[in-house]
Length: 193
Image (cartoon, rainbow, N blue to C red; front, side, top):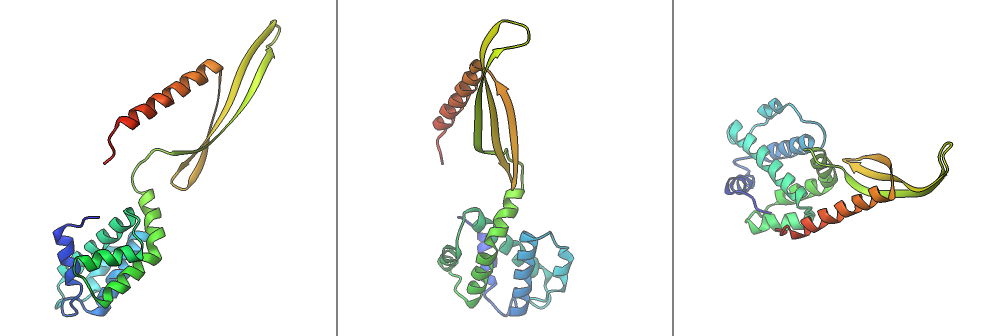
């Protein structure tokens, strides 16, 4: 995980009690967690937090950069120790790091859930069920003798499970399988970075 120099500089500034008093730091940390996990808060509440001789810019930048840190850490699935190690490598060693890491670790699952809800992605296929039936006679015709496959694909989009059902013949099922194999071959050719 890489953070910009601006974010790192702001995070190092959070160590100084002269720039950001302890009470203000805790209020900003609570606001970040509430903003990322629950519902977006009215950011006008940040105006009430006092820091650096009442400079609102310090409060805003700390809020934004702590939010960025939590989102990036959640995206990369950092645990408490990994986040603490990262902050120590960028020379942030402080009792606030413990509070920051503890707050992140206790809210990591909720942050990741909110990240999943952000953006538009295709549903993931999590399961398939199928059933084969043989049609011996259809209506008044003589014997037909065709196979029908009844398919049910279980998909998961965000936290919601949906089912897609369809019926196809053997030839249609073979065409579907061929297209899936073709897609897999194309994906295997793409270099992973």
